[in-house]
Image 1 (tube, rainbow, N blue to C red):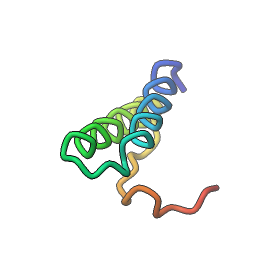
Image 2: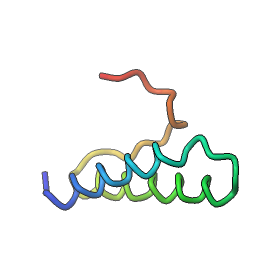
Image 3: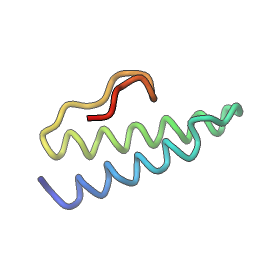
Length: 60
């Protein structure tokens, strides 16, 4: 696992969580940007990207 991948995944998670409940198109776009960054980090670390809707997975 790369440090860069971990940082991207963590930063994407924070950005997604910060904006996912916003109703404006700008907030929704920022949340999507966070998801994209999170998945980019996951792919760099050899993990599959998250494809489910936010908040639908059970914590492990």
